[in-house]
Structures are given as C-alpha cells and as structure tokens.
Image (cartoon, rainbow, N blue to C red):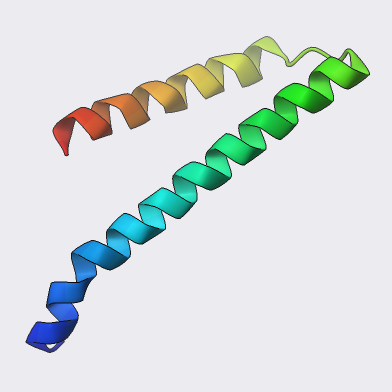
Length: 64
C-alpha cells in the first residue's frame, strides 16, 4: 500500500462502521415492528444473543 492509501484507511473504516451501525439499527427496528404487528415474541435464545452481542459492541466502543 502507498502512504496515501494507508492514510485513507481510518476514514474508510469509520465510514464502514457507521454504515454497519445504521444497518443494525434499521434491522433492529424492523424486527421490533414486525414482532409487535404480528404479536410474535422473540425466543429467549434470540433475546439472549441480542444482549450478548450488544455487550460485545459496548466493550469494543469503550476500548476504541
């Protein structure tokens, strides 16, 4: 990689992370809306996995 390409890496990573966060929020909202409209509850395993993944994200955000 050239020096210029290396300098652009943080901006690219930041852009990708922002897009991922927006996608996560969109999908989370859609799941919540669909489950409320259809009166279907998420399983305990799904809820536990969501909580686990959110904890990982929180820990990583603190370490950045």
